[in-house]
Length: 335
Length: 274
Image 1 (cartoon, chains in turn red, orange):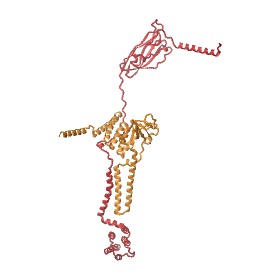
Image 2: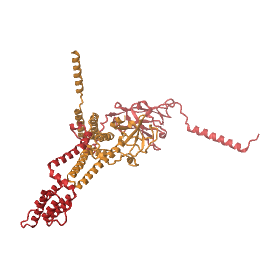
Image 3: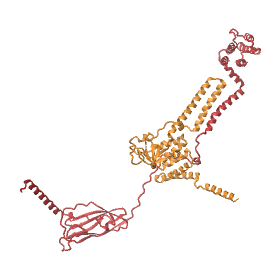
Image 4: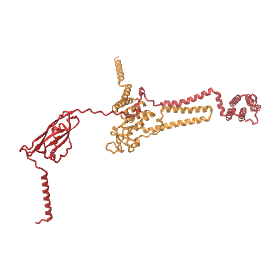
């Protein structure tokens, strides 16, 4: 059976790819040297390697940190030296909280490599940065002793008490000033007055009308004349006459105004003729209407007093005629 | 004879037991004032002063629970709570004081001041949705005693006018009577209208004690009714209760649910509902 050329080329490519992969894996895995230790070996090689701790301080506060640098000198392969994992070593892990620092890449011709660590003591009993064992590969060493051990000797440290934390500065109350003022005293134990009770409203509605009635009754008892006057006002003619009498003293001719007021009233009340104006004529006309004689004489007297005040040389005061006229009208209204 | 002696002894025991209350009202008041004074003395350090004011507020609250209801005590409670940093409790105290004397100007001003300090978010319109609106009311401006005096004065004017009219038959007195009577009727109508408006406040008041989200249902799983959480001090009216949750209504009419643990309930109104 004959194979097709494309199939053969594909198989060839697959074989080449497999060979490349196998060769790459072989290059990535360096073969372990015989007798290589499994602990404290970090890939360093050289004939005379020294390691030491370098600390930035030997006295640290309880919650402070030490910058500890592991310095490795004499290595022939600094780039291949790996950082010792202190956090996996019990003697370090028990004493410190460990944070790896940033290691600077060594120079190409340098034979020294450094690994910084930040170590925070777990308590005040920590008194040292412990010794670190560091095994390295010495190709020129006798067979069986090609992995000697160098040691970074312990460094005593002192952990001091942390200073007391300063309390934050007090912040004053920023509330408005009026909130700081309150009422004091036993008045706070009293119940608030919530207003008058229903009885007070009833009393208010009843007492005031009663007082008004009482006032009116008293007024009638004390001022009976005033009461009569009030009745007079009910008569339209009398009310008009009284109003005219009240205005008479302020008129240009008060006696004439008084006489006109009285005559106007009499004309309205007794239907007197307009031409009857003198006292005698008026009295006679009233007698003809069977008005009491005393009333007739009183009317005549009032009109005469008005005439006297009007024409007498001495001049009579107008107060008396006006009062007499008002009394006359009241008398006639009562009759 | 023996029974009588036993009865007397029992009465004496009961009397001494009642009078042996170690915390009399006067003592409690004194302790409240002392704690408040201590708080003032420590006011330069808020951390130390606030517990003293809280102690004072607790004593004032106890006095209020003992039925010493007056506006001065309510105002003291509110001041103590605010200085203790408990704004919601201060708002509740002011409301309880206004339930007793709703016309008290000091309490009204203090309530507005407290409402002004509620930390509503700057964005959104939550503040306008939550702040209670104020309709002018006669009962908030005039005490019943003042109303009694005013009504009495107008009633007196009516009857004085009537009496003077009866005496003099002067028509002007009738006009005087009419004016006084109209004023009296107006006062009565205002008071009646105000009474109707106050029926809206019959629902118990709740104040948000700690920031809480108003939800559409009575569980945390329900979506929020409003975008922002209600800040402490927000006032609402309680509509319903179910399973440790309260259905509340905000001033704008928005209805939602709040957990009972997140709100303070006006005790007086709460008792009335319960």
